[in-house]
Image 1 (cartoon, helix red, strand yellow):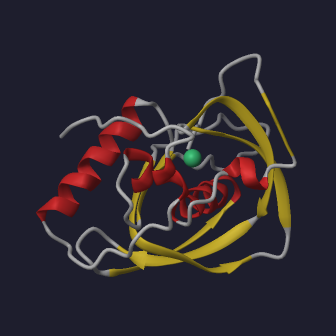
Image 2 (cartoon, rainbow, N blue to C red):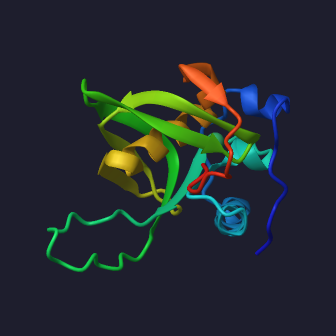
Length: 174
Ligand code: ZN
């Protein structure tokens, strides 16, 4: 497994519409393993194949969704969950949207406020080509929307109402 170089703006690979994956072969398995390594190394909570220079419809997401706890309870330590999605598509998204601050591994030293659907249903395939369906809400829903945008050549800066240079580096880059 290898950490690959992350493509940065204005690399045109970030602006291309990525190709659907048709072959679930060893090359794809190596790409996915490398993408997971690259995401963890960055560190980030999501990565799309164009961000490592490969114009194919593959995303990886690793995020620990916080559980809701009552004030009196100790917050639970939540293990991050890894999602690998090939040919992902947003099948449903909530009308209700929410503003959140995003940073992107391919757009250094910037953050922006982006309006996204509060919840989404994502359909796709796992790394072996089997169908997969994920319902996500909150920050996880935001990560999926950001990563799937990457597959269509869209950057969060295209959608942001404003972008700025943060005083401190942001966590959870995607
Ligand atoms: Zn990004």
